[in-house]
Length: 138
Image 1 (cartoon, helix red, strand yellow):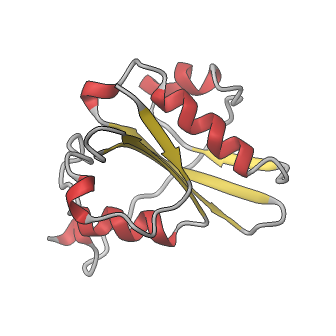
Image 2 (cartoon, rainbow, N blue to C red):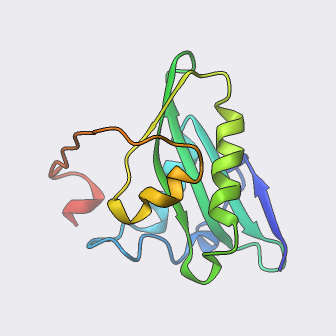
C-alpha cells in the first residue's frame, strides 16, 4: 500500500471522501468535508495510490501571520497506527513553520498522540453551539 500526500484539494471528488466522521453522533455528509478541505487555510490529504481513496486529512485555519488552529485530523480506521496521522501532522507543521503559535484542541484519548508530535498541554475552553442551519441540525 502506497500513500500519497498532497496540499491540493481542488480535484477531489465526493466518492473519494467516504467513511469519515463515523465516530460523530451526527456525521456530516461528504459534501461538507469537501467544503472544509477546500475552504481551510491549509489542507493536507493522504490518498491511497491504488484506489485514489482519501484515507486521512488534516486542516488548519490561520491568519497567515501569527497563529493557526488545527481543528481536524482524521485517518480512516483501517489505516490507523501506520504512521499516516503523524505524517499528516508533520506536513501540516511544515506548512505552518513561519507561524509562532499553533493551537489545537483534542479529547483526552488523543493527548499522548499530540504530545508525541511536540505539542504541549495547555488548558483550553471549548463551547459547542447548536446552529439550526448547520449540518448538525439535520
